[in-house]
Amino acid sequence: MKRMIVCAIAFMVFAIGWNAGGAPAQADDSEYQYAGVPTSPGPVPPGTVINMQNWQQYKQYIPDGMQKMMAGETFWKMPADFEIEIGPTHNFPLPKEFNADTEKYSSQVKIVHSADGSRTITGYVAGMPFPNPTEPDKGWKILVNMWYVYVPHLFCGYDTFYLQDRYGNMQAEKGIQVYRKLSHISDYGQPVNDPRAAGIYYSEYIMLTEPEQVKYTANLTLYYTDLSKPIDTFLFIPALRRSLRLSAGARCSPVVGTDYAQDDANKSNFNGDWRIFDANVIGEGQTLQMMTISSWKNVGNLDNYYRPVFFPKPIIGKFEIRPTWKLDVRRIPSRAQGYCYTKSVMYVDKVTYVSQNKEIYDAAGKFWKMTQEMFIGRNVPHEGYTDDTDNWFGPMWDMQAAHLTMGMSTDPQGDAWKFNEDCKNYQGRNFDDIGHYSLASGLSQILR
Image (cartoon, rainbow, N blue to C red; front, top):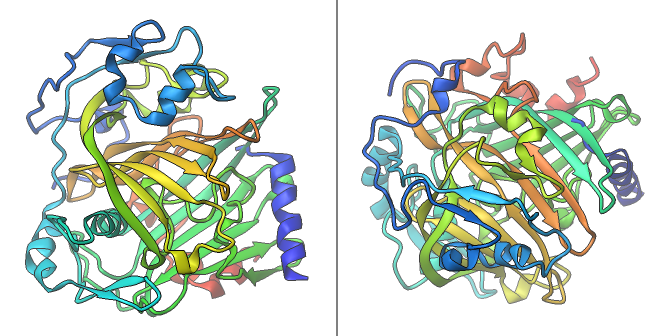
């Protein structure tokens, strides 16, 4: 019965569609202009324009799935006026507390192999577990680093999403998101483990606020410091005035009706239980990524995208050439039965451990979905400018269903997410309330 209710809610949301260191971060656009660390021109001169006429000259820097779109081999195709402008390659240092914890604790991290093919780690405290990933298990070490890479211990704000079908019909939706690190913290003025953590490592809270038909629908996911505990996902359904605990096997279910599965919806496009995944480096090189933008107001303006694919125009930002690992990620054989993806191919930045590009293959091994999510740097209170903030925008293209989800961590007016103490009073809300936004019991407070 629970499965029927969850499916009904997911269908309802899908049918309606989406509406959607230094001083504290500033509100003006200078916050998004990267400065202070030397940059280099990169292998492609700044000012170079890549378009539909010359893109094959630069194909070594273009991910495979995007090449398919540019060649017209998929349902979603790049339009004739498509252009990418190249800018300089930036150097993005990680915050000093995170680097200090990496130096202090990484040597004690050990890999534990299990008989079923799964792996876990022991000795992890904070920072990056494997600062210099090498064989054996190099690809898997990179995947674990992606999971534990720096993000502010608290970030909050509004996400706006747009769902579009093959005919160009589009609906929008808006929601509150509160993501929080409660353990393994590397942030200014914070303990490694929050005394209120209750055994939780990380919490992800999403509550829809528009349109009215789905208002107050909420999704809470919890990850635990005890690595033997499975991921918990709770769905609050306003019509029932209660929350349901989803099965641990529901990682393929859509996140409130989008083209994202539960295992997709996090930084670097990976939100899975890394213990039951394998990852192998299948290539190394350089790829195009957008790391800086002109402003979040330009991000929120839909006129600044190539339609119908929602790829950003140069007015939003320039791309740069980044050193990259090409990673093949898939469930271990003992846990692959019934899973929605045979594999995902990720293009992982060697400096930031962010994967902006992800190509997804269905259970039969056919090319299914692809995302181009731009993760953009911001100023974090007391930490300065860092790329690892989880501020993002970009499309997830479903090539088989001819559907896409365009999302952005801002509202259309350009009010981007806030971090850490700035979440204590964001538009009159205290998103620092752990009981409300990071515990399952908090879901009962939604309609009060």
